[in-house]
Image (cartoon, rainbow, N blue to C red):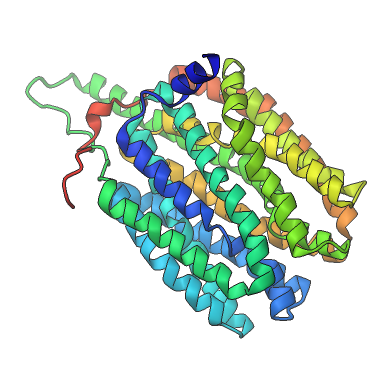
Length: 432
């Protein structure tokens, strides 16, 4: 049957370690309760102002930014598995502490810690995929992980909307339990996959001094070029994700101002995960024939356009249509971005480069809610959504006209070839 053949081509050929990581990701994302409802928790349950609530949400992004930078370093130095365990076993404790805080300073400080430890695992997780999956299969693997994230979110956000109407404490308990579950999967099923560091150059057959200098210079220039590309690429993706973060920060507040409830928000936002679950894999496979950067540029444009729709309509139906538009943008771009950096990164620095990308996500989680909240409070919702559309369009143009040519030049001149799976220290499942 065509459908079964398509599914087989999508899932076969990926190693067991990837599927254990996929399972843990799914468990964790079913409990994605607290962050999407944090602004509503602070305004409705604790009586905070919009400015205070969006500022606290932005502090989560500050913690995430710091955590993912630190994670990139720890992942390469300490190990992927150890970094993930630290994240997944400390986060539940921080969640429960946050649920009981009442002072604004304490809430803010705990939210920074929550962002730090929650996202500490992300670069390590991406590095594991880069370690164990062959380069040609990485976009498919990242797409499958992304599908698991949204399968869990489709269930979790709908459930979270109902839990919030019962007792906000249930959101914190559920989030803590599912995060702990991912930690158990990591502890018992996911081995360390960190590649060996490059061996020193053999001295048995010394090269002429001129050749040695040429090799050192080419390696330095190659990695420096990749690093500069990664920073610029991450900066543009940061802008895109800053637009996207409005779904957690100002979108629920905007819906509330238009007399829509938490349950309405939960139902509408659940369309995001539902659409990705139903159509995400098929759309990504269909787009494999097109330029990766054309797809990423389309992603930035659609994310901006989806939120831009709210400038001209504020009904529940309009919010639902907007969610579907920016969801298509999200699902076509997000799996490709880490695959690009995984292909270019030196084997022993995969965690570092995924940490750069993760830091962009974290910084966007700080900038997006803070800027969105300031624009929302100062200029109104309509101005915010127009700015989102303009930013998405300009970012799309930059990705096509600037980043794509740089990537093509780097791909053909860099000395940093994609690593082989033989570089992996071990993928056995022996007890830690």
